Each structure stands twice: as structure tokens, then as C-alpha cells.
Length: 275
Image (cartoon, rainbow, N blue to C red; front, side, top):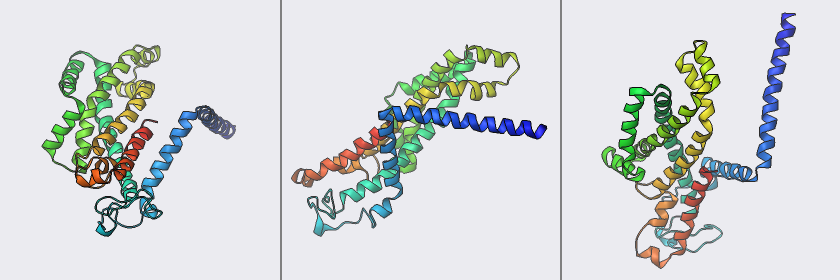
């Protein structure tokens, strides 16, 4: 008898999970913009993952004989002033952009969400202290704060990720705190407190899942901002679309066609991150 009940419970749980998946998939199919965004994200991730297959060889290796060539079948986007394939550098640059975006968002989420939860839930002196530090960081423009941190920590991929991530922490703190202030007064939170549920469980089981929608939106925007910062060329190689499009020099003005193509993937990467 006990085994039959357990089997019924398992089957019911599987049915509920499958039903939720079907409902989610049905909603996704009705949202054309979400489908387009999903396809763009898939293409972007696959191109970054299979970059060595799509473009074998070293994208940074110069070949002065083929410098500033117009688009051909071999190099669909042409070459730059050092004879390097623009398409190859764009494909390999997407790997770095993806790494930067994920790393920056991870830093912002790991530091910002817990502080925002604690600040909004407990209030009082804890909230006052966290918010004054947040106000101090928000007094500086995010781009300027990231540049200052890069200047202190040094140039490099790791330091760039840390700097941009820290500059985005205040936005997550303010966003999560505002959401928690409205959610903490809900009946289900009061019921959890009444039965003696620990604060940690209330925060991460009852409150956090109900504030994930604005966090998801902020995360997508933060990924686009991180890619733009990296594409601005404020760091050393490896290649990225922004660096190719903003490189100064006489050769750029002499052969302006190759400057247009690298700017497109930077725009595409930011658009994909916000889908």
C-alpha cells in the first residue's frame, strides 16, 4: 500500500513538472521576440564555442601581404591593416565578450543580491550602513568608477571583470532592496515568520524567487554594458569588435570599409545580451 502511494506521488510530481514545461514552451512559442532572441543567443554561443572550427589558425597573426583587402570568398569581411582576417577576429572576440559578460554579471550578482536582501529585509542600522556605502559608489558614474578600479588594479582580463562587476554592485543592491521592501510585507512571508522559519530560509526560499524578474532584466542590461565597456578598447588584446572599429590611424581613414564590419558584432552582442 505504501509503495502504491509513493508511486502515485512520483507520477504526480512528474506530471506537474511536465505540465509546467509545456506551459512555458507554449508561452515562448507565442512570443516571437523571445524566439528571435533565443535563436540569436544560440548562434552567438555556438559561434564562440566552435571558433577554432569556424576559423582555424591564429586570428592575431599578421600577414602584411594581404593587408587592407576588400571582402572576398576567403575573407568575407576583408582584412585589416596588418592583413588579419576581420571575420576571424570577430569570431574569436565573441569568446572574450561572452566571458566578460558572464564574469561581470557573476560578480554583481554574488555581491549585490545578498546585500540587497539583507538591507531590505532587516532595515534599521544594517540598511542605513549598506545604503550609505551604496550612495557613495553611485555618486560616481559607473563607467568612470570602472575606469578608476582598472587604474588601481591594473589592466587585464581578470582585473577588468572585477572592476566592471564591482561598479555594477550598487545597481543590484538598490534594485533588490526595493523589491524586498514590497515583498517582505506579503502574507506568505508573515506566515513563514509566524511558524518560526529562519530568516535565511525566508530570504532565499520565499523572497528571492519573487524578485527574480527585475533581477533578470537588470542582468541582461548589465551584460550589454559590460560588452560595451570591453569593446571600447580599454584593455589589452585579445581582439574584439570594438577595438577593431575604434582603432585610430591613417589606414583606417584610407580603408574605412573594414571599420564598419567590426562595429556590427559589438551591436549584435549587446542586442543578444538584452534579449
